[in-house]
Length: 302
Ligand code: PMP
Image (cartoon, rainbow, N blue to C red; front, side):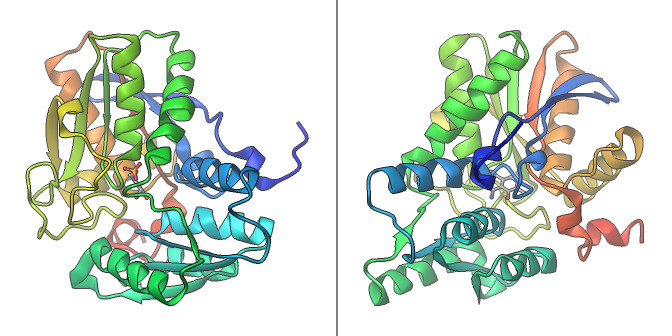
């Protein structure tokens, strides 16, 4: 197939059958997006809409607060379409995230570890005061984040499985994935159950905003504005160790190298299958293992 732009290559990811201890789960391979993560979907949609409406044009300043992956997607869009990209993210983000942002030509502003992603959001707010014309994705409040997953990820999952779905489980960073896919599935099949996979001790839905964990991309220390807790039927709390074990297991038993939030999603899916062995459970593999070579996950095999 021929494409005009890297942004046209986002989405239409494979849905992989993964065997876990308690049964089979269907996992949407979002790490196969061109920027290496699920966040390509929201950036592609929001940038395209802004360009079409004339709000965003070549040479403009664009910025975002992120745990890393949305920044990489925006830097990719910026390099492709000539934007001046500034990314705010916590200094705890992996070295690979920083390096990828630099490779794509973005300016990287690191915020204190103890402030988590909230610190990056605050720094972005200051940047907006200094540069009032800057274009921001605003993933934690922008409803188009949810729409990208409702019309994109959710619709694709429905088609991938011909609507035969009983349960969806995934983590919450901005919450766009869980809200968008969750609402699509519940609207199309009211029996579908939606669960959140959250880092142990750092579940935003349970009000744990101070907990430390190493599952980058979820459990950012606050409950984003776009998250509607009423859509969530239950929460699974996942330890760092379990997420690491499961991510390594997927690489070594399926040849599918993914990051830690994928590991956490699979741990939750496995627990759901223990209770409901007859359910068709769907989850997400949000990003790739290469983004974690400098982190505790890779120390286990290096
Ligand atoms: N996993 C990873 C690795 C991520 O980067 C993100 C986004 N921060 C998520 C999961 C969660 O996605 P969402 O923002 O849609 O909740």
